[in-house]
Image (cartoon, helix red, strand yellow):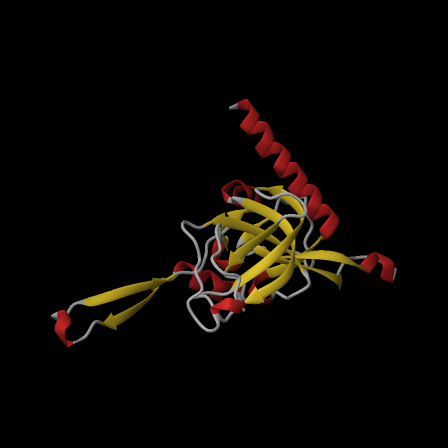
Length: 213
């Protein structure tokens, strides 16, 4: 998508006018649909209740009012420890058995199965988390060949997919392709090991500030 068009879509608010019925006395309800704005990854980290590298072990799109994923924490930077499990909603597009680095916000209450054979569901889920920033807070981890280098060994490795038009990493974290190049949905790859270093640093900063208070 052209960058100019995307910027226009972000700035423009699409208003859908829904008629409420004959007995609504002519009242109309306006629904606003907005593109998410930009947020620095350091701010996203601070705003999240859970930040973790998880393996998606299963998912349920049948029994609840929204999709639910069950994840095993491979590395926990905030809110969860390595080896723990968690459940989060809004996980459409997550691939079972693969890794994803997630920035999650705790939802109030619990999630109860309402459809289908509820006996085969996860049951009541508490706590339940949601992916931050309209889904962009879930970042796929994959082996990719997008990095610079003359040798295949340099060009290929584990990467983290960040939609940098919406989630803004620090300038020192190189993206592939570069931010100046247009990509689908503004998504690019960063080196996984460098990304993990960034998460470690952000965790230390949050813990340090917490001790200072």
